[in-house]
Length: 338
Image 1 (cartoon, helix red, strand yellow):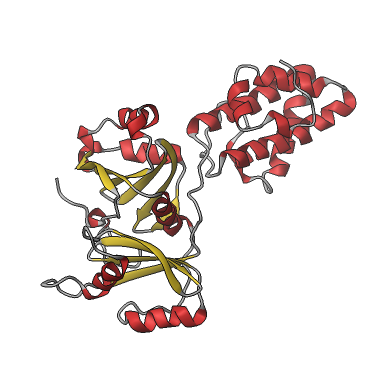
Image 2 (image 1 turned 30 degrees about the horizontal axis):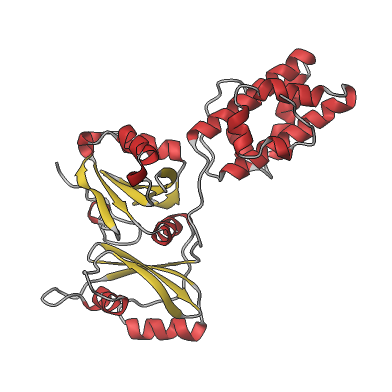
């Protein structure tokens, strides 16, 4: 299989050759056609020994997809491509990983939670221009110390990515892809810029971002579908109660609130409408739909007292446990009795 020649944004680094830090390999890099992705995800959820913090890197011809796992649960995703780096919805990421398996390779590695947050932050957060010159590390780190900068540095040398947390201009911690057994952080940092004995001095690519304290969990495709069905069902029930008005009021409310709650752009509309999944945390999705329900049903309550709780109960009955798990019903002003 021919390796891809696609390069990382603003560098000469081939995406196909990127190596990320690893606490231990769970599956060495393998042709994707040999890997059953659904079984891997199911095993990570189910088996006690597999419930670890980890990442799956999928190397495709024109991009590298990163899937992040927290205690075995698929939590978030990002993509690195010649056009840029960005967070991506889990459903879309899984579609890309499954596409053209004969032309892709995957690797699955356990990694500390802090490293997963760093890898995601370097994709999801815009870079900061600090004027850093990686060809002179002494001057670079003196400048960071003088400015007392706090954030995250991604350093890529010889296709190996490393992540360094800086606080007040001082080194706090790091995750190094080319770290040898028994090597300390100081030595690993030195080899990033100077190379190892017998190897040419590497060209270092550097990216500075604010960083994240933890990897944010993304709303799963299953949860998104639950909320889509709830919004459609609630609109249909309102239309049945108020023919010609219910559905219209529901959509008007959703459109008005979608500027404040962007997750609402991914639910509602005509039943069956295809929309891109939102990239948001479960609570953000729950908050968005709850705000819409309060606004929309609050209008109906004025005309038909008691209708709100009844319609919510009917629309949410079948998925009440999934909705309740993200505290949806507690966000509403009506008491829902099952």
